[in-house]
Length: 385
Picture 1 (cartoon, rainbow, N blue to C red):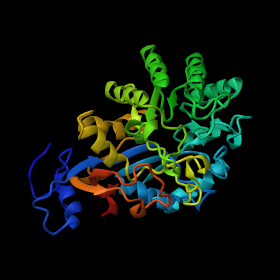
Picture 2: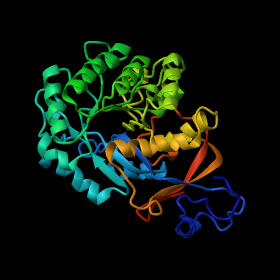
Picture 3: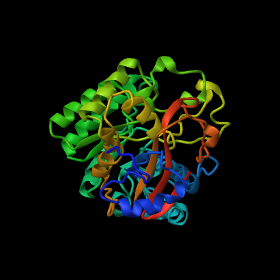
Picture 4: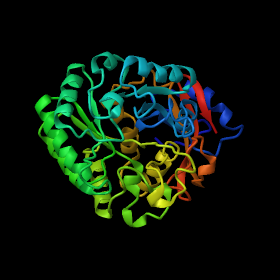
């Protein structure tokens, strides 16, 4: 796909419209190679609005997504109000319609208020949400989770699970994979499509791999930080604190193997902004969550593609085809939604330059390659450097 030319490199024979769209990038780009990539999809973001506007808004979050080359995001339901009914969901969708610069698809909550006591209004919500999740907390009641799966399956949707068994310490491996064992048993019994969020342990990978081999309708995601950082690299700073926590080098190796062999279907950021004050209390005292929309592709391109772990096409698939297949996101016209990249530009990750309101990232100070120059969504330039 590499070719020296004085216009960007196009895909899907889109060169005519791309040449015109990208001309503002510079009066003289004869010695620069630009790569045209599809608009990425992130199936796990927290845009914080409604309810927590001091952390992030729909406007700032989607601007950050566009700056990272993302054209589609799925938003998690831990909001105020929680989208557990059509009326509560409408509060969020009205803001999305007004302020979002890219495609934003909400998830409905599995349980009312994400309290794990009563199943949400699944049937009424299903036509209007991408899937269902109680992200941020694990559903502990086995009977309630079974009921939720049965109703989600009947509604033709997907359960997106945050696996966290609260009988174990949050930082333990058991907290993740023990609840995954329970969920996979229920998914097999009910036939409900099941997607696991932010897998971080080798035990979880083994379970997902076995479920897929058994023919179950199961997918999973991991995040850039689990693929590039191990627990012995964590510093006593809030920017290293997320849920689930980063695990060992062995876990990272197994996750990378699972990316290569297709066990991991997609990469999502779990973009979770907090205020500076909430993240300035050291590792132990800070809130869980980091930002990731603006660093995802550069970090993965630098650490996975340039180091020969996966080919470029595999990375693009993990950020486009994988999530698109699972959650029904398809581009009607590749010429109208895409991102433009200078893959040779090397720079330092500086949170103060982010568009997101959150600036807490474990990648602060990293030297990376790959700069997003422009993102176009449905023919409109939504980001230009």
